[in-house]
Length: 435
Image 1 (tube, rainbow, N blue to C red):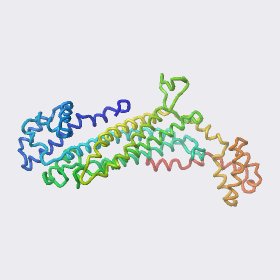
Image 2: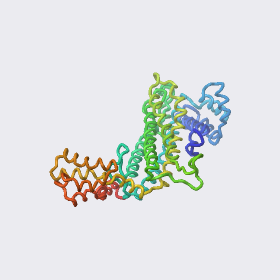
Image 3: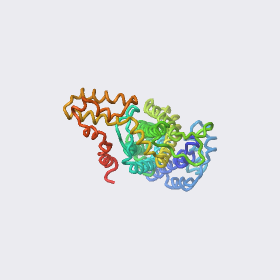
Image 4: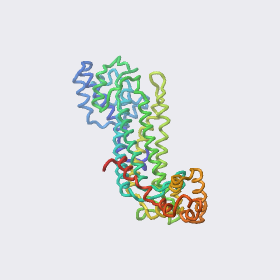
């Protein structure tokens, strides 16, 4: 995490004080359950809560202890004992470090997912608003970066809305998958601790019991979580790249909002660069970079090793913080995006009507021409226009072989822009419902 790309609410989830607070809650809730089962004195569990519930844990002191013990959980428990006193001996009964570490990580990941889901709602709201604003704003559709047939700018945004709707569904599923708790002991057999303790802690922490663990919660859950973040990041980059293309000087169909006093270049005062979109591309690469180690973390030796630990200490904060920042930035970018319908129309007309070539092709086949002959007739009139030598409509009208099949009026009919937009309402209803 670096401050430049970090929002405070997400960062707070990963702060040491937050982590130690969650560790304490896991231990204290476990003590409550152990007390109810008669394993430890009820007064001991009460004392743990009374003395440490509102404590501010001394991070520097815990670090000092860890430098000697070389073990983070033992360092925390030692510091907790300094706060609680003799009753601290009843804390962590029958538990192993991973019971605390893994349960805590999953609490953090679910909290992070909740923030990311709220971010996605912001993106979806911005996309929906702008999609309806430009529902019938005609623009050129492209394939391979080349002019194809007309679409609307609203359809481009509706496509993104549907994509991020799927992203939200995936993240909801990933959150559910990672929201498990393991308080099952050294190798997951509950030999030293009753399964009812796990059930109690899970409920108290907003999780569900892990059906079966080794010493750790299975990492396929986390692999799915971080893979989902990676897919969302790719969706962020897809729309960011589209905006970057649209802002190119030769295109200029839309551009990022440029505020008063903003500077685009240290050397060239005229520049207005798509810096936010380019930033989103870079941030998306970083989120995706954590997918591979998440997948590799699934593979651990026997009941567990700690090869996953170092990677997760980085990927947990970095991936969620980075995606959080990127989603909020994307929502703002879409909301304030400058759109230029006149330039869209200019680009749409740039190829002199060639965007209607398929309609002419189909009209010829419907009048009796074979598809192969129709294609040749249309293409031989299209290629001069492609080279800037004439108008497509006029060339077709002058082609005697074309005229064998189509009258001038029938040719002109194929150049109706509205024909391409007749199902926009249908698509919008599919994406947005009846609203």
